[in-house]
Length: 94
Image (cartoon, rainbow, N blue to C red; front, side):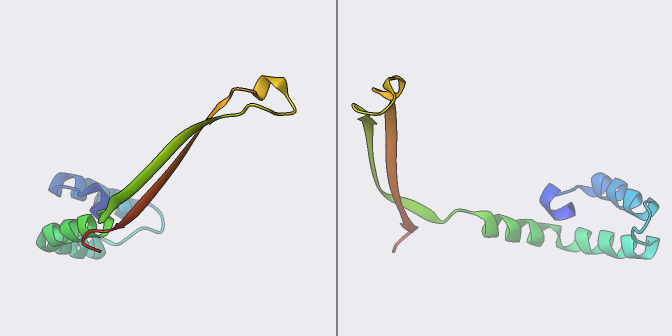
């Protein structure tokens, strides 16, 4: 929760205080260790999460078309447009 929200020190303190007060939560000592770790490694953790979630794929090819149904069992479905899209993605440089 701390990393995904990229909490600043005020948010971190409020979050850890709430965690120590809830039943089955963490102890004050554990909260202090987490706070110290977050203060020392916040930038590294944030950059790691960004790198893990970045979409490195590129669009290599795209084909599309719109079809109209001209013959069906039910008349109300005739001339209903249907879009078909095909995208080919791949890693950049591959």
